[in-house]
Length: 184
Image (tube, rainbow, N blue to C red; front, side, top):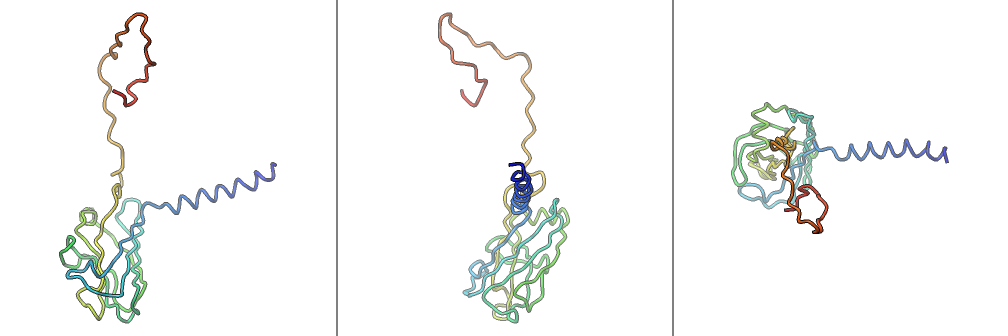
């Protein structure tokens, strides 16, 4: 029995570590499709940009992945400023062409990070077939993405003085005091 426990402890620890690593909250994937382009593009291509952010979200490694075309058709990938349904200027150039998968690194100033999470940036991939954009994905971050954003609100101070004693009718059966317990 002791030998079995000695074998199980490292296995359970490894499983715990691997499950914690697979639940990394700093990975953000933006999917790109032709019908998100402005105007929409009918295409067989689709892709994604996957960002791997550091703890304070000021830097990210990223990968750009395109499906449906050979690398020779791809001419570039960018992050652009523009709300959904609007085109805009390049904010960051992610990659030149001739790839189906590529990677890079991105640094965001505090002001750029605020713009990044605002929903007014998008990723776009260009090809020789559609030089103004083949596929596009709007950058939308989940709630709690920014460090400290998911912190609970500060505790409210306790009311001054002791709580009022409930009135009790002699001989009446009273339920137990459960505090506030969300019941009113």
